[in-house]
Image 1 (cartoon, rainbow, N blue to C red):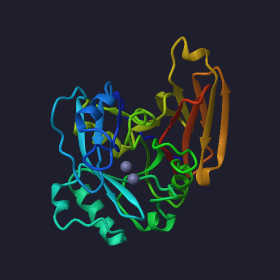
Image 2 (image 1 turned 30 degrees about the vertical axis):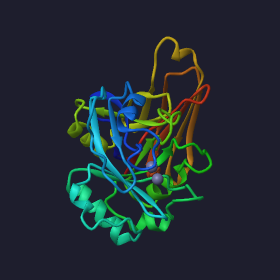
Image 3 (image 1 turned 90 degrees about the vertical axis):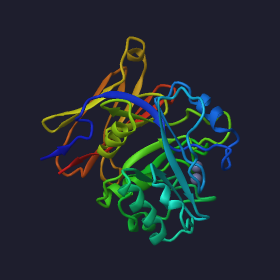
Image 4 (image 1 turned 180 degrees about the vertical axis):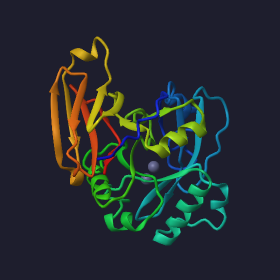
Length: 294
Ligand SMILES: [Zn+2]
Ligand SMILES: [Zn+2]
């Protein structure tokens, strides 16, 4: 049995979000205010609708990413570090060909693509069959902080893609437009250093997890056992945790609860993948990437 652990490479843990708006599209605030709203973040992406907002002006966030949200009426797609040449003859029309062309250009530019808020059924969402048709995108936005728990969460589609054999990572982003939507969901990336290159490299490897307030100190394997070290300190160790290990088709493989700071699952070999969700008493959560089991 082989377990592919995306968290193998250690580094520093960095916090950030890739999908946020300014008043350059339908966000309420100018770029400089958005930087302030995200004070304390290690990195931040700005992804206005159908345009690349240039990073400029005073900011304290060390690393910033150019991004764009391709926003057809049907579906939205986030491109992080797209080449500026995508704006030549730009159209947001949703066809697999057009969206795939954007993915390819962004990947060839060293960036990555994420299919966002795939379950936002009242406006812009993804049909699973279209997600299957698309290629080379890196992930799916499984947690969107825009605000609707019944629409902005998409673990079902992630599990469906993973179970169909697709290697796609889960992302968490605020998709912030207005004050109060910031710092709801983010990505915690284990990178060698805080640079665009190191963060993108770690993201490609899947060396990150989604958080809404809780976290992992690390995820490792010993033989066939997956070990999740939950974020631990004297105070957190007193709090109750709910840990679930999920496998193919979103099936629950194992659950652990209690005032614990570690949870383990021994793989049998037929899981396909193992991913871990943990909730701290009160609702703060963290969601790991899948460890593929072969
Ligand atoms: Zn959107
Ligand atoms: Zn958005």
